[in-house]
Image (cartoon, rainbow, N blue to C red):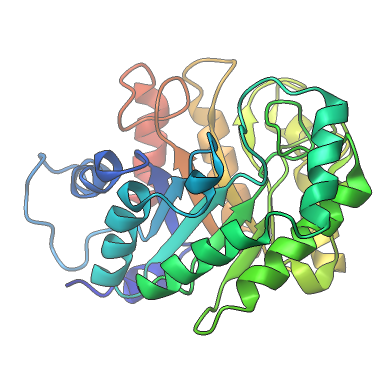
Amino acid sequence: MLDLSAHAADRVPFGAFLGSETDGTSQVTAFDDWLNGLPDGADLPADAERMTVGHTYLAGNNWSDIEGDPAILGPWTAWHRENPGSLLVLNVPMLVPNEQPTGDAAVAALLRQGAAGDFDQYFRTLAQRLVADGAGDTILIPGWEMNGTTYTSRCAPDPAAWQAYWRAIVDTMRSVPGQRFRFDFDPTRGTNDIPWTECYPGDAYVDIIGMDNYDQSPGRSFADYVNQPYGLAEQASFAAAHHKPISFPEWGLFDYGDDPAFVTDMLGWIADHDVVYQTLTDYCPHGFFACAQNPLSGAAYRAALG
């Protein structure tokens, strides 16, 4: 058993999304070896850098997924228990099916059902399972990228209902004995379908202001990402005004290929702000460890963190 507290104490806790189930937890040691420039399977010295944030996602095919599939929760809660000082981050869809095209009217109706408490039971079961698995301190991200159009769990069809539903989820999960959950409000960078500030459910129901940030349009330079409407600067100022820290649950490359300048700028921005954690999305085209097409970006990442 390794205490990761010391590794997280002197820098922003970091990790990478490596896979949802055992495909993710089985890669943590190899990621740490890669980060430190060691061959896979090498014995890491005690002072080597290690990822301290485990990040995974619940599927959103049906309501039993939202209750917490043991195939996903089991490996990651075990990793969290076995590594004191680690953080466990869990993205949770608010509606199902979450990735099937669903019209705005249908989404609005489902959001109103959620706001009325019709789906509370599923989130209560999830909270109970996390507590029973020793992960009552999980950071939860319900309805991530709510300002976009990718997911059913989106805000624009009825922002008031989305906010009320978020509050119902938080109240339900916080009612479970033994929990110490934190809730991360996590839009994607920019305006997208709706300004993300219009979805904010209130300070009493949010612990962290997140943002998913990829090297993609709108904008081409890191300054564009900082200064665009509802971009990185607005995340930081909004969080400060609401006395909240920030996070970057997803970040990586996207539109512009192998871009080490983006990696260096992003890690510099993270180091200069009140960031609870950051997790790289580590599959192609976004990442560096499992994606050989971005060697320069991988070198920049390792130089900064390894």
